[in-house]
Structures are given as C-alpha cells and as structure tokens.
Image (cartoon, rainbow, N blue to C red; front, side):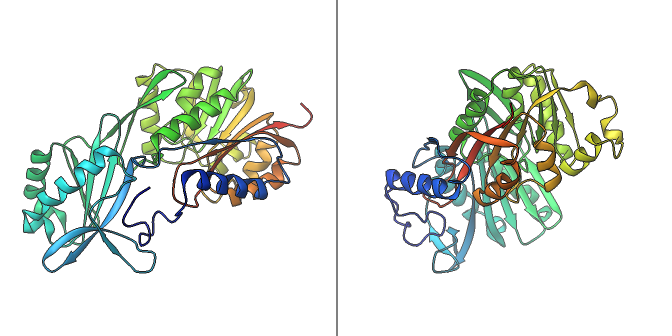
Length: 366
C-alpha cells in the first residue's frame, strides 16, 4: 500500500508486502496452535485498500481550521486528508462532509470526531461533539439535506438522527443474497468481503446438521445464512436491540426455523442445566432441540468456563475468534474432548497484527 502516512499513522503498522503479511500471520498461528493442529491453515485474503466499511477519525482544530486526524505511532495525533483502507463511499464522502461542516461555524465548534458506516444500501456519518447537539439541530438538518446521507449527532446523553440511519446490507453467501437491517450501534464486521468468506466457510464446514445452538448471535450475521443447514436453531444474545433486528432480518430472508432469546451465555447455561427458569424462554421448549452443532463468536475475552464445559458435550463446534490468545486458552479445555478438524485465518484487518480465526472441532469419540 502506497500511503504517505504509513510510517506515522498508528492504524496500519505492518510495512510489508501483502504476501509477507500473509506469511507472518500464518507463521504466528502455526506456532501458537502447534499443540492443537498440524494440518493446512486456510488463509482468506482481503483487498489491500478500500476494505473497511466502518471507520472513526478524530477532528483536529488548528489555526482556525479543522482536519481529520488519526492516532499517531509516535505522537498523540497526526493530521490526515484521507484514508486508503476505507470503503470507496466513505473515502468520497470524507472531503465533502468536512468542507460542508467548515461552511458553518456552529458545526465546527467543539466537534471532536466523525464515525462512518457504509453498506450496500447505506451511508451514515456520526458527528461527535463536546456540546449539546440540540443547540445545532437546524444546522445538522440542513447538512443532511444537502449531502443526502444518514446523519447522526451525539453529545453527552443526547443523540439526534437525520434521514435514514439504519444500516441496510446485502451479503452474498455461496451464490445467494442475504438481506440485513441494523442499527448504527450494532456490532458490524468491518470488512464486508471477509465477513462473506467467513460465513461461507462456516456453512461449508457443516455436514449432516441437526439442530444448532448459537451464542453471541448479534443481529443474525451467521445465524440467518447458516439456518438452511439445520432443522432448527436456538440463538442467544444479551442485547434487546440486536434481538429485535435479528427477528426483522429473519422476515427479510423468509427464515422461520430460528428461536432468538435474550439471554447471556451464563443465563443460558443455567437454563440448560435446569438451575433457573426465565420468562424470556416462555414458549421455548429446550428439550425439543437435539443439538448436533454449536456456533460461538465470543468477545475478545473468549468463552466462560461454564460455556466451554457445555460446548464439550456437543459433537461439533464452530468457533470464530477475534483473539488468538483466548482461543488458545479455550482450546486447552476443548481439546480434552474434541480435535481441531479445520483451521482458517480471516484477514479482517490488513496492515495490522490483528488476526481473526475460525476453528471447527469434532468430538474425539465420534
């Protein structure tokens, strides 16, 4: 990547060719997981530029002017005039939005950051302020009307919305389009192309699916495309707004074999063990499921011990991990009952040391 900020920006830190980055990441994973897996590690490549559909930039105020900024490697902030790794729609909007803001001093004053989200059918910008955005509501409305984008303004305890701010996405999975709608606060995989490859990989690793249990399901990113491999699915998520979106996404894709329940992973473990009853499970007969597979995509901290113990009872495990270190720790427990049959690296964040992994495990005695 030929970027003039590569030596100073704190975001892209690998000053290597893409092949060298790929070799580095594969070597790290082979070393880290040598005890658990010695087979081929699939590597799913990303574009080197234009791959980020979600990005956040600071706003630098200097000499009566404003510019975008990023965290620097050797300084708190560096000034930038663009970013090569963001989606083309975001890249094109960045200068237009900044110039439009500069035309209105009320919009400039105490602005400290801008977030961008793009998708197949949406483009949303969020302006972040150290002042009550209610004071500039009319200015923001005019800005949105001129730019024809979804616009959000936030300050402490206040959120204003202008235009359509839901994110409408289309993912192409194994030759089929899947439709999603999400809120701006939903967890969204930042690299759409890699997300499609990740979901397809998970689906293609399933043979003879019976029933699936999924933890940390979000808005149904994996759940909905994978539903066609199973008789029925029980999917859990702690966020009420994510569950609401997941139900809407089921309707968008004519899916009717998923039960979404708002429970934390720990609460579900208590329910499965008959330790507690939950009103949120009313109408859901846990005994009617015959789980042949479990899918987890946990936060960076990995899975809790009670979740790992539950996973150990299920024949097939699909584990998506954003943190190889906690994945390795979790495999210390899971390897007592399961073996790793497939391992993949999904290069979500090119030019960084971040590594996203996918692991499929099968019971040793199966």
